[in-house]
Image (cartoon, rainbow, N blue to C red; front, side, top):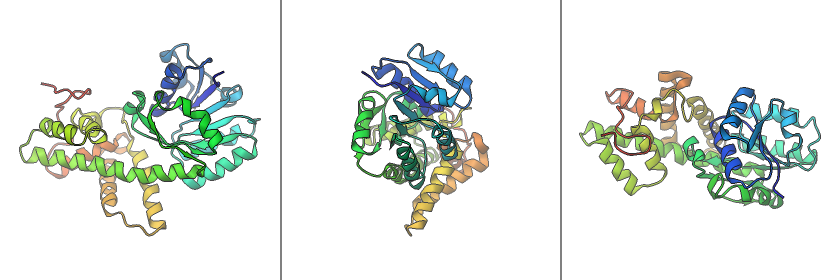
Length: 315
């Protein structure tokens, strides 16, 4: 019999993962959705249909769940929710935590959950909301093998295209890996942004440059290029809010400083992130590093769209 899931957190990533879990997880019972702002969860449940239901009270949401999957906005939100959850009887439940939390905080939280008689794994993901909605994330579960094994059937082919399995590693190891992986992600975004600025300044059409990127470096670089050239970095609702980028990059730089590792290129990207924050405020998007790079080179922040959101040319 399939487990009963509760999913906590209906941000852009949580909505995408819960939808794919409900629609492709081959579950016997609806996925219970919870969000601090209840209308967000109830509206999303109405969008997905009868495979989900929304509950306003956090304790009620997890009461009859075997597996509780969380993807919350901040570390403080995670700890606040678990403080309340651990006041109840959680014995026998499996908690899957996909929020952005430091390794140290995860290890301490896992210990508290296990002392309460429940199981806990950390499972950060790689991929932005559009990738999540397409079910193409890369998941990184860490914790006891027996616990990780329970979530594996609901990853590849459901919410993910791949799994980096860290069974038997401390739960904080997954977060550690995600933080270091963030270095590659931000450097790639900045590289794509600079390539397109240089192309435009030297008279090479950006759509031609995109075709080259798509052929030479398919995958993430191509996705970032498409998002920049389709204007997604200045949409009303940011895909990756700049405050989130500031928070994560601060964690990375603190980790590097604590271990005396120099990250000169990453620090340069962080300066661009700070410039996006200064330019756009909290409405800024991480991909706005393309916009500030344009400003620094004498171009308008907003690039006229030359690609549609599906990657086809506008003309």
